[in-house]
Image (cartoon, helix red, strand yellow):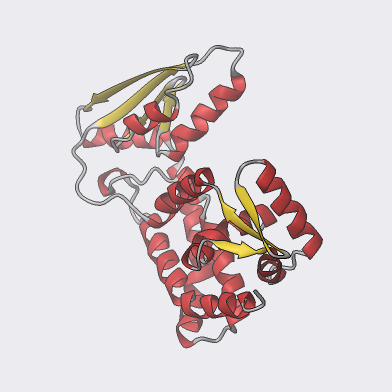
Length: 266
């Protein structure tokens, strides 16, 4: 786990509920649980402040850090994708985004592709992405200030369920994703019984809970959250999500006890 990601996760899961800020020595104490030395914490905090993710203020001799509005927006967007799944029946409509980016704007093109994947779109062909969810407006809004990006959105329906499943298999590598979900389940499902009985110390629970988020956080970038009728048989994704939510909840009380104990140094 990278120190930068740890700082974001500590704010997202704990510090937001404790006033939204943290004194430097409190942050140092929290990061020590993950074997991050004080010197590294100071460097990371300084860099994140210069990059616009943290703001700082002085309280006597203490430095207090808090996330900027932009950082909270990024964090909340990611949290929504990690913790929530689409509900309700699919209307059978595909939402398509067709884009054009100048050849010289390769970095912008890559940024667009990453954003499309983040919103759950899959690549059907060069410049054509699609999703069963109506998130085209979010994509348009994300690149509204980029005049060199040309975006067009469409809604369409295919000829039937077989065609829908074929498109889903072409746009996403569901087989590999399903295998990765299975590996996550092999790691965390056997641990649930121990989480329920409280075999971990408060410090261990904090570390385990953060590791859980770290291990799960990249799945929303890859998982388009397809409706059941588009998924392979015995799909592991929904089960893995439920195990993630249960483990995250079971570890909460002890992890928060550890945070509260460490922040008493403040």
